[in-house]
Image 1 (cartoon, rainbow, N blue to C red):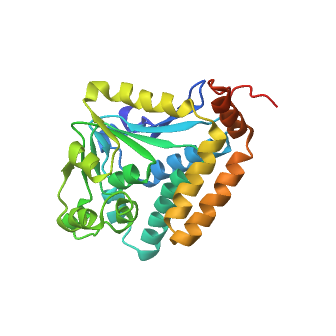
Image 2: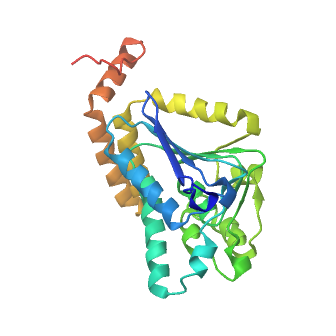
Image 3: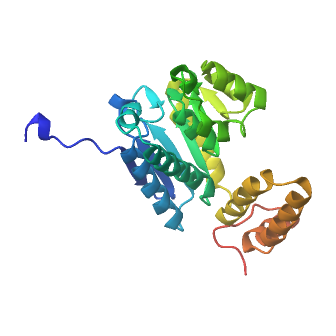
Length: 268
């Protein structure tokens, strides 16, 4: 097989360890891990597989190379200047982004480098994010005459409106430390400590019961999009359902008994 016939590397690597931690790795470093149609399709297939896996506990989303994700594939977009195509493309991307939120398990973005436009959106849409100190974040479509409309949706739900609008209107990048200060990422560490910091977060989450996390994550996003009266109704219903779970009964009993809860084999 000659070089011209060599198949392209897979856009995404997907693995799951014995703990139920799914690792999704954007694996097109030479193309800065852009969200082309194939990458979007691969991410959607992987997220659908996680949603079907009842043993899944966490998704860690990471990338190879210097960039985390440089957004949409502009060459691919320019090659098909048709409204119907663009509508289909952004609908495909939005479905994938919403799948991150709709999973019953937390999604952690491990950001080692540049995250721009839809790549910044990917970070903002994840439940949690840990960044290397060298990472940078931007929604700079405006530099090309394209307001980052879809990235603005999760961005404004992570940071204050004027902070988000400044990034969207100027196209200026912010550092990892500034991203943490604005609420876009949770933790910032040196690159050589990134994996260890992500693992700390993974271990902390794995120590909690899956059922309670699934209920809590669903409630977190639903109540945020509604008025305060409805939010309290949703939250009260969720807590009542949560208290009916065996893991909660065991946790409360363990508190009363002054012992650690046994969530692996709770008493009936």
